Length: 152
Image 1 (tube, rainbow, N blue to C red):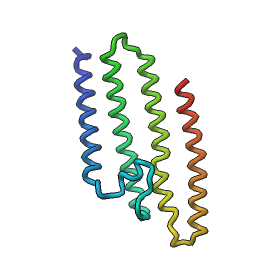
Image 2: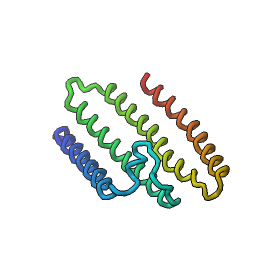
Image 3: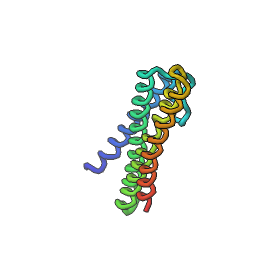
Image 4: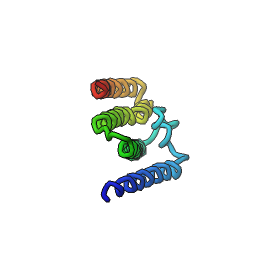
């Protein structure tokens, strides 16, 4: 009896997250929320609190989208013959590590545009942008290694 209940629960969670994420981006379709998802900087330099808002909202929505992918994987492996728990675990691990990598890269275009603000001088903006990108690159390299190791 409990096995039959799990698929409808997963379907319900998936539908809820899909409706929430698509509805949220539909409400903010004229804002600068979608461009950073494609690793493109916002069209205009965002104020500090607007940059924080963009990053937090996109991070939350990406987490919920990853939950949709995980629910779909769980439904797929629940319906498959043989119930390969090892393969299911590997796929969920790969999804999780790609999520961590993407979430590490997600704020980069927003902060890149924010730090290129020339109001404080081109030297200062270039220096802060270079420092940010250097620190971001070192943290992303570590996450890429985790993704690579999870595939083996």
